[in-house]
Image 1 (cartoon, rainbow, N blue to C red):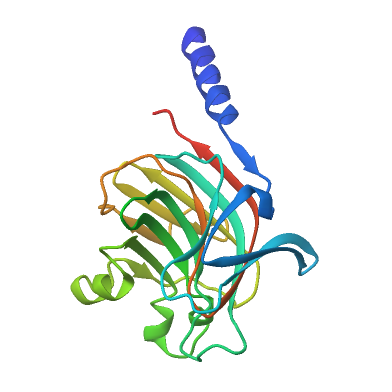
Image 2: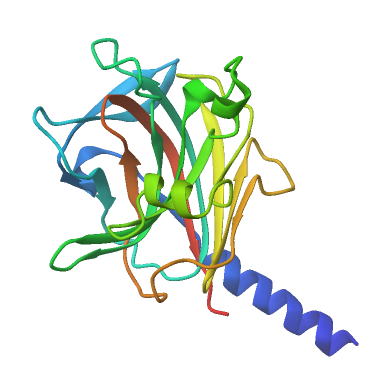
Length: 221
C-alpha cells in the first residue's frame, strides 16, 4: 500500500511539473491576420487581439512553444463586439488547439459567443458556446447537420473576464466555464485524427478579444 501511495505521489508530481504558465505578450505570439497589443483591461494586464482590416479567413495568435496533443488548457478571456462591427457579431472568443499549418490552416476550437449568454431569445442563449474543426467543419455546417450537438448554453456577459478550461483526451474534449466542476459542452468525436500542434488565441470577425493567465498542461497518459 505504501509503495502504491508513493508511486501515485510521483505520478502527480510529474504531471504537475508539465504545466506551462505562458507569458502572454506579443513576443510570444505568432499572429495570423490579427493585431496584438499589450494592454491593461479591467485593471488586469492582458493582450488584446483584433483582426487586421480586410481579414476574411481565420484570425488567431499562435502561442509559441506549445506543442500539444492531449491535456488541459486554462485561460481567462473576454470578448465583445467591436462598436463599429455588424450587430450580428457576437464577440466570438476562444481557444484553438492542435493547430496545423498545412495547405490550409487546420485546428480544433472551442469558443464563446458572449453577447448570447444573457439574451432574452432562448435560441440565442442555446448558442453561447461552440466547437468547430477547421476547415471542414465550420459552425454553420455543424449546426445544420448536427443541430444542438456542438454548442450549448452557459451564462456569459459580454466584455467580462471569463475563466475557461478545456480538457482534451484523444477524440474527446470537454469545455468548462466559470470554474464549474461539470463541463458545459462535451465533444466525443473530434473531427481530425489527434495530431501534435500548438495552442492559439482565437477570435471571430468583428470582435475585440482579451486574454490573460494562459496555462497549458500536456498529458503523458
